[in-house]
Image (cartoon, rainbow, N blue to C red):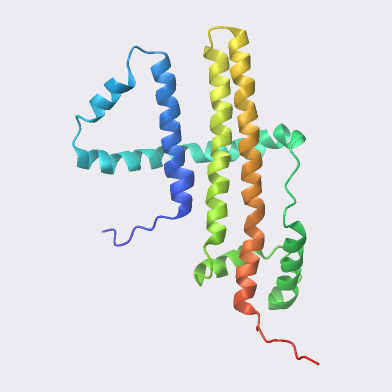
Length: 217
């Protein structure tokens, strides 16, 4: 028996909304190559009981998102790294603050682990989540996942359009536009990714630091 169902922002952005987007894209491709209309599709859906649609639709969208996510992850790691990675510079936002906070935590709060763990991010993130100190980093994480998935969807649409386009000229135009969109989405995902570590470190230190005003005079 399921007593609690926990839904995170990651589930909403990276799974549900991604699945919804995939469904819309596939529907658009299907309508472009068939005699059906949007009105006929909605007419068919409206024939199902409302309760079933309200329950089934979110589950189906989430399932699509979960299936797509590992492909998007590998696309980002092994393809984008050697293509867009040569064109797009890694974001350095907050890098100075991140290095400062990381060193402060590593030198003062890791105890016997100091010197053994180079990057305290995973420990700090677990600490922040366990004590429920902040959910801001989850906002950045979920949007990072969503835009990363959008980059993969855009690239996949471009490849599909290149193959099925009526002419090579039209196919190449659609392909390059899709790749441009994928690059924009990739850059945006990197933006949100660069915010996560400083946010986690700040939440950790806010809980750990003793906020005693310095003596004046």
